[in-house]
Length: 602
Image (cartoon, rainbow, N blue to C red; front, top):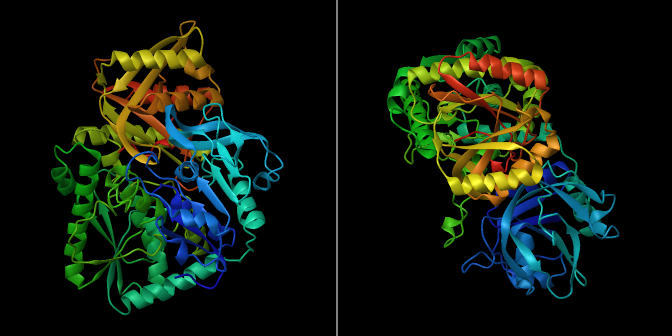
């Protein structure tokens, strides 16, 4: 089953970050493989496998039918590291106790190592910030295990067997926002498992990709969807090296919801790069197809189907059999993982969010899809783009979702809304681009709010524990958005906050850690809230039909993210400019981490 190279195997319990392990291990020179969680112990060769990682997952170990590991694996003598659900599973299978917590823990939290002599924590700071995404927790450690780390909300945050190399961590070491995560993972891989580094570089990826594309396509024609973003542009240049412009026909579709003047700009880029690109204005067609559609999945599916219909029509004109797509790993993970409702077969076929180029594709297609960079994360794509000598305007361009404004305008679409969003988004980009956030944009939504006294009381109680003597107004926006809680999709609400002290907007007086801790508490303790935003305006003009939410995040791999923070004068001026737009009644700033929010709203 496995090659003869020593490697780590990752037992897949359906967690959204499972591919992060494979990517990180690859980067540090370790061969690894993701395997089904129910792999029998007999199929694991002790001479071949040097370590085992148990991933997180959207399940509860105490529920009937939850995925379980073969307990005989614990007796193989191979070091084991359980993360999140994997940690809880270790506790459960060794007769510890796992229960639902009073509140979830999502995003940043303070971590304290209790045993600094432990090899797993060698050269790791005793106190640091870690990344959590869980609702369950260990309440009683198994016999012959010891507690080795804690957080303010999770007393038993890490456990270790006293007699076997078995470790469990409740936090996610595999995400970039856990400060000491990579050190801990390296300690496990190198010091505990005894693995040795295998060198690699981007040249080998290019070489292998060229070989695979030649085998898949040969001398046949292909079309390539290009949006102007770094992903599709990189794929187009890579495949063009193999097929040439006679056989590779790139297509740029304007769906009518692009950024201002975006199509003209990207077409110039492509012509300058020597690509064979056809421009298609399908704005009327997309708006007609999307008429009356509100839901996240429905919008993305409709967009995916409309794109494919156009591509298939163009492919027939030139007798092309292949569609080259720039699908990347986060697209696949969010479109195929994240719901525990498929627990009966446990194939982890649930979704966090349908991406138009993955879950949004029609089941029957006349084209064979080729995805050369589907194993890469965003920053790896940028590395590849630089290696292929793409211009900086492309390689460093901030991401834009394929559906464009369709997923940044909440509720039904209209030409009026698209125009307002385009103007608002341009203001946001012009104001923030000099700070180089990973992604930054405007969201347009109805100036409408839900009435929920129970939730509002919870909000005030939680905010008062963080900020004393404040006047608090809370708003639950009427349009639900997509989030992530405990590795599971959450299609829930956005909370708007207006916190005032001494008759002033107190948002501008809060520091970064105050805001991060507050949003973690609110999303962790209130089940139906996945996003927290702060009012930038002084008041809300309820006579206007729309509000703007500004979203800006810092991230490396787009699997986790933190909100960006800017000087107050920048934020205030941004608010003032947006309020000048027609029909805008208020401006809010989204301060939610991923998790519990996704980067995009739907």
